Image (cartoon, rainbow, N blue to C red):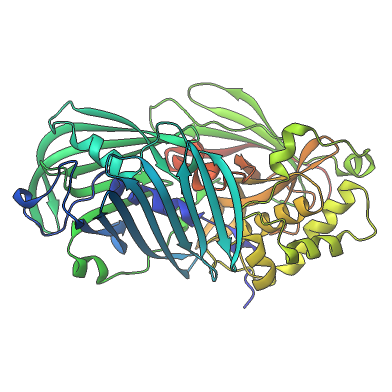
Length: 522
């Protein structure tokens, strides 16, 4: 069944996994094992020596579980974390499963890693080996591997090494542990700065029982955005409970048995709580430019970083508000403009990667057919945008995040699939492209009226500038209800490339419309 275009709003579901992976990364204890029996030395016993289950909660309801293990085989330590989530997006059920593994030497040197994420019909597999400061990384979908060699982030610790470093510190209020960790789901070629702080000693409720422990604060910084989790551990650093608030939602993990982790999972609506009311209707077809104002809901200073693009310019900024204007581009001028050489700095925006699979034979064939006989970059871009709008027949929310190779075969997806496929077709045609993650106005969604919701589209480099195009909404001339929060080349296609502080803290600020300028119908 085809869905309305308003269903093309999205939440990038890969973002859901990182609050849980962060906590599991540092604290990987054995479930049901007494503290006195723990082998927490730098020389653990052979076999599996850590095994824990945690229930995953969203908005106070259980939506899945996380299972963490550590196993020693000779002088190798393998860490394995499996996370399962079941949610609803716009009333459409979606299952997400990730399996992350890392292999290290007994003294904490990185050896290899592998991640498998299933959010669509075809799982995305990533594996890598580390040697002499370099990583050979292989991504695979449809049995087709893509290999690249990149530098391993110097000083970044995998889970066992981070675990060893954490356990060297006495657990008492005031203890602070600063580490750089390797988290390839979130940042492949840079270490993620993390800080663990022991705040206080007290007690916390865990599965109906009042349990003594220590309150900890975990902070990580990805792409300049700070993510803070508050948790509780016991005196051996066994995890008890963790909570993270972001995008207007509260995520929790609670230590439990395997049976408790897997039972009574319920579907929770994900998208409605992230919608932002704007207080008035907008005629998107007539709107030529819109001036927005962002203000914090509390007395805190405003820390939102609004990027400037070809369409979006900051008008004024103070500690209490940001005013910015989004305006349509002059597409008549773009159509008449002369072709410009692509500068060397834009080479990353022409490369294929795990999701923007511009080297896939079917993607290349689709691009070639769309622009046959057309030579001007603007006309080519318009043809490619129209082809994506046509190819994706089912505008649904049942796909978590798919590669261009999968999209052109399955012809299904929401705005993220439209954006990814357009970016891939553009690169296959020799046009630099990048993804934009931001907000879009819709008159009604999930029973709420006149709201902004998360959205994704693409920008193509035409005549020396980035030009926004939105295949999900059939727009080559993108309307000014699109607010950009982050852009990404996808070169290091991880969650981190899509994260911005504005996205994570969207529940902390309000948006109002200062002015709408209209000039006829477009």
